[in-house]
Length: 146
Image (cartoon, rainbow, N blue to C red; front, side, top):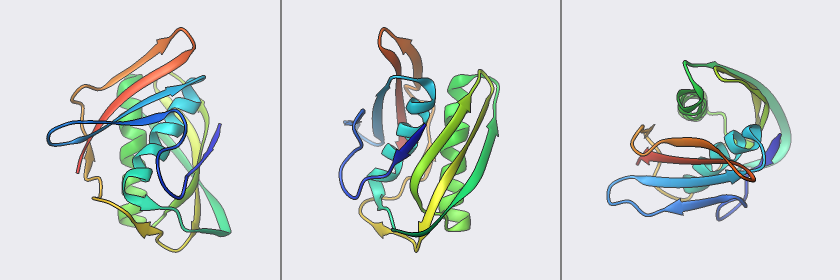
């Protein structure tokens, strides 16, 4: 499942949640893979506009954890590390498969650092973390330390 990052605003299926100290997102998606991809796209939409698409290249991502909720945290933390530590700014996120404990996919990086549009996300919190099947797909609630 590929989700392209948007220049401004949240991608469809993602809405910002009000919180006194942190920033929250609620994600609704038809599949678990789409839910993970939208969570990552929504996270980046908070603070960076994607760079140009010229020369885009996929960087493989594989994360593991004990359960799906922790897998979502691991995926988002991996994306933060790639942005902060390796300068990889996505123009799209691709989630190929999600199991109970593993995710395989990719970050499609563009050229340049993108344009900072808001406060940087420091970390993914476990406060209010929810990842659950719903009647028409999946729903996730994630809060970030900004």
